[in-house]
Length: 370
Image (cartoon, rainbow, N blue to C red; front, side):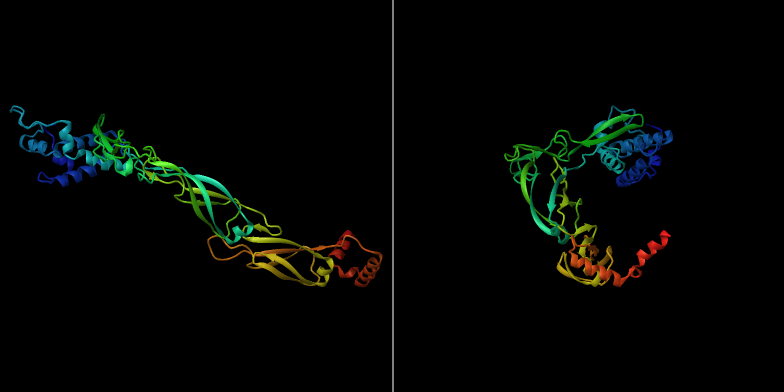
């Protein structure tokens, strides 16, 4: 390694502090790392930067380099000042910097937190419960962190020791020689599974797993306006993960029972209202159902069958916001099932008195036939 100006390679002065050398190395290593730069020039530069920091990042090697021009120390001595190999390589903080670099762009293998599985179930609501909202208590079978050991798997949550393999960090580092030079690979500790702890005595309640199956009662608030086929998500109420991580979700798919008379479409309600043909002709008042009770609807005289009457804000509340849909009534004229002789006679007289000219659409039909 003699003959190279390591200070120039790292872009620092000869009197630079350890922090300045470390900072410059971190910046350059990220810039020329092979994962971000695929060129041969970048690979050579990256190798050169590593070589420079291996010397300047180690106090003993740096002192040898400054005095003799080589990290190996006095070339004429009896071995005094020679480097300590892999152990010295770490003592300069090289591995700590590589931990930062690899975490920055995924170059290292990390012990990622897991997420527990979701719980999916179905629930049926009454029509009015969906429209107005309600609260129900449901029973769910799920996996939760063991309360006795607080998810550690150790008896009383305390019967564990620090993992000797990783010294409690949950991570270990390995030296790896590649075509780009010597690099450091970081991974979770296989001995403690990344927890940093070793169980001395297992929790008797969960057998050391850290979680257990439980039956739990959960209060669920169903918002006003929820509709058939929609899913209510309760975050974090699903199963606990195996080890570190976050709970899954509880997903409740909603089914809504139909109303006896009203039909819901989005937030509007629809009603087919059959009235006697005499009411459609003469007009009158008819009681109809709404979500808020009975409503008296006025039918104007001479209301044609199929006429739609809209009553604003008598529909379903909008989900999670203010406002309501409408109630739309389709008036349909109904004829009697039978007529006696006397009634027929009176209707014949009435029809003659009204005359065909009173029916606009019927007369237009007759004209189009000609």
